[in-house]
Image (tube, rainbow, N blue to C red; front, side, top):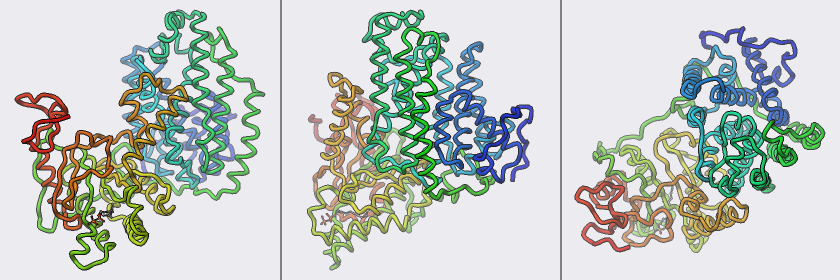
Length: 621
Ligand code: FPP
């Protein structure tokens, strides 16, 4: 255990009403008095700053509450530093930065002299949480200190995603670690994002008076411009017809966003009760905002105690029943300080290893950074023909193909590729005979069970849809995706039950739903809106599309992402490929000239050069 300093007792509020409650006592049996006091302080901060959040935390299992208080107290501490009215913006930003850096050191040391950070460090170690994802949120809070302007809803949402979502995600991880996952069905991701958006909008409307007092108006210009005069009136603290109309519109929008009955379907009942109660409280808050009228510009409205009780009392009853029926994992003792540097890219307890070298000792070629593809996608063709060539069953060809997959992943890591996407099973592959389908799916399952990439710096993802796939396979894919989510090396996306047209159709449907919900204006839909509704919005365009097996087709593979991809077709069968073939493909790509529809200049950069099937042909688009 660390011998580093303990929190300064003077910093801890030791007022008599802060005696530990049952939850704290039970969850922190092994904690020293300073740590218990730190958690009690976090609890008090949560209750004082946000009674609604405090009430929601009370709906969680008692073992999880101290960790939630620590998270909320940390958010509050950072917000207070960023919002301090009497301090210059640069100084406020510097204070947030100092706090964030101190947390990094504290996490490495396993303790802190600051009570809120001490509780945060403890809960991260106790629940094996990776706090890396909070770095971006903290940086955003630091930047907020300089004031905020949003041109449109997209910019506003990006802010919300960066600043709020990582904290919410930590709560989701907590539930998972406790064995009661707040699992979201893959097709409910958009619902979840809107829900978080709605929560943030409710918060902004609630705090309108406080923000305006500081000259802040945290709403997008796009929304303000629809009500001419509203912005000036608001900034001058004047309640006028355009302000009233704006508030009515935004309240209705927030209400639609937080009302997502399908979002909690299939979730653990305890987690669903917490989220449903959160939605209920937010709707009550929005009622209070609507009823406030001009007083909204003077103070934050609050729903009455009775209204809150109507939401919370039944939720308390139902949640205690749900949790009493759920065996939860209670965390073991804290992780020792030596492995607790959670702001560094440590991925898991076992650490990561580099890929094994190629048997021949071959090393990757040096490719200039501006000539490296960011994303290589591969159609692994020729398994069946390879098997025939070797007088084997087709399934043996697929099995041999897995060795090539490992090799290509090793090669991708060695050459420093960021994204590799593999076409393993298409929506059209269901037309094959049942025996072959079963064999391919069984091979994929055994690869996941064996997990040969487990200790590599690879973030594994799955593209495709669960319908028709075996449940165990879907569970394993999701588990692997979750386990490796914080890895920073290669992003490996395996496409299983994937079809490009299917992806586009579903994305269009999600966009249509967003338009129906009023989240997107159909007259202004652009490519960015489409990308935001793709299953993996962060997947970059494919730079190089490689197909083995002597066929020259793209076969419904990544049609959205591969529009400008360089195409590369090779004759060999997939099982015969190894990392040197990937390096050859990348070397070939690095020599091609890409123009993306523009006229080539004498020294064209990758961003301005065009796509050619072969370098000799003129670009035709
Ligand atoms: C195409 O060859 C290949 C497939 C449909 C399956 C690919 C699957 C694997 C390589 C399994 C391992 C994958 C991972 C990600 C571990 P084909 O059957 O169409 O060959 P043919 O054209 O010669 O008949």
